[in-house]
Length: 358
Image 1 (cartoon, rainbow, N blue to C red):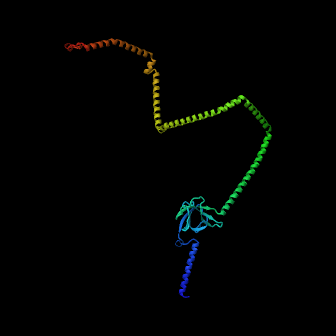
Image 2: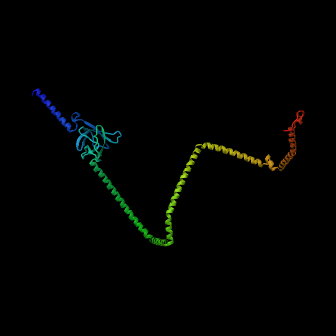
Image 3: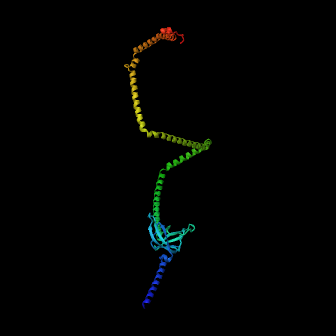
């Protein structure tokens, strides 16, 4: 085989190998974008996503439409964000829900299913869209949870049956004690029943009286009026309480300034009390001086001779005033004459006479 034939066979092998790689890449969903028509990215958030990793298939109604390219926690750490690359020829709509489903062998798959809410498809999801997904537990986990719950239920039933057994035993003991008590107090119980029968007979006789029945009917008839009066009393009581509350608020508005100026008021009150105490002391000294026979006022009150002297002096003044009255009258007449006839005072009056008119 010459060199030319070798090159042809090598080229043919490379071409076949390239075709085989493209077929394998298309089968496993890793066909390059320039060959397979491109992909778009979506982000799905789950509360938990067990078994999901890079390369996990994404299906829609059982058909492979893409694969998972990244799995990470959300920034707050409370959920998981799964990044998936979907082929452009497949469209996902808003009324479809993504769920994580695991098989019995533990393999996980992301599957889009149509929502049961009945809403219309709407616009298809575009590149970079964020979706919320749901998680369907593993059947093995469901069975384990059911077994755990069943064990807890059996334990609860066992505890309940044990408690019922204990309660029945306690009830049996209680009934035995009650039977003994009844046997010991049989005579007392009989007497109590007889007294009850007697009381019922007396009550029947009282109620059987026509006058008593009439009074009972009258009381029952007046009962609505009593209830109405009670309601009126309660209403008046509420109004009174409201007024009291209003007065308390007014008092609070009055006492609040007193509390703010309390120190000044107390200081003024202290000074006023001190001055009042001083005034009381002075009045006390004045009353003592007044009651004492040594002072002027005391001499006036307790010394009769001084009182008599003052009486005689008053009489003398009265006598002098009576004696001065004619003199004052003469002086008034004299001044009137002088006013009428001023020539009586000297030469000028003699030279220039007066008409005698004031």
